[in-house]
Length: 396
Image 1: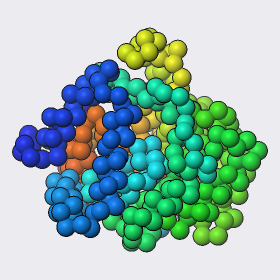
Image 2: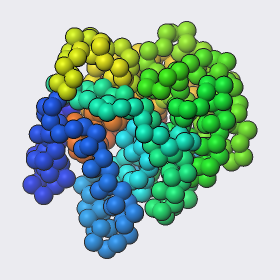
Image 3: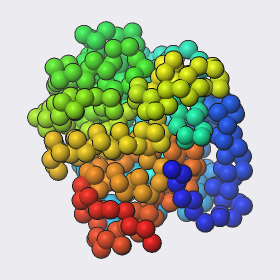
């Protein structure tokens, strides 16, 4: 389902520019190369973040914030020691090398998750490895944790002269993964090296054990393996709040086990879900770039087709974990209705990626305005009253 669009913006607005220049590129599977387009965007955003205090740049960024931000005290929350201006965040996987950490709040986000970052820099899987499914508002990726590594990420973050953790306009999380060259047996030390280096720069950290694109990584979702990993990281001095990100393809008993482990180990929360190896009814859909069907292609599926399964996993987590464990909902959120649905199912926070790419920058204020309207229509004084409430989405 396409997200409802805001009223027609003036031609000078960010959204108008996005529709004019980017929209046509995303309307076709075989349009501009998806990865090249992402890298071009991140190069510009990285430059803006490093130079955001320059007069000309700061003026342009202030205009961006005025257009896209929707401040509202009813949307603010404090979770695992972090103050979130609103529950809407940028999911991991877009800003892999943390180049735009200083400006994500200006797009309206209450938080941004940077990475995935590994200890060793690595090129990722062979190209092509990112594919649009424009008609379905979905994507298939097999990137393979391509990033510059933890040391480079630290340097990049420091070059942006960010406010200290806890004093930023948007909460910044760091998503950590296992280096491809590291064995599963040595995985805890690999994650620990990254976290120990980057902990002072993180408001929270995420243990990514659910990407389908690093061989063997999902084995770390096994309770014994995950417990060993969590215990290793929690011993680090200055360890930030830790969350774990899980796959949508887990069986119910595995979801229950992770929910119990998160509670027992004192994790700050669980993020549900990563991309899916299930083709979700699109098995026979062919990729324009390769000519092969999705069931023949490797990689994780994201976007609108994932919405139903992501919601099921979230509800299962909430039922098992109870209301005390913060949950972050991600996967197929592309409208105020899908955002409200995830929150009322138990997510305290939600994240965007694929839906944001297709809809453009206006999706963030559209969702925030939609949440504000739902609070009004249900008579809720604060977003926390909606979390796990099961309240329906009320149309005007």
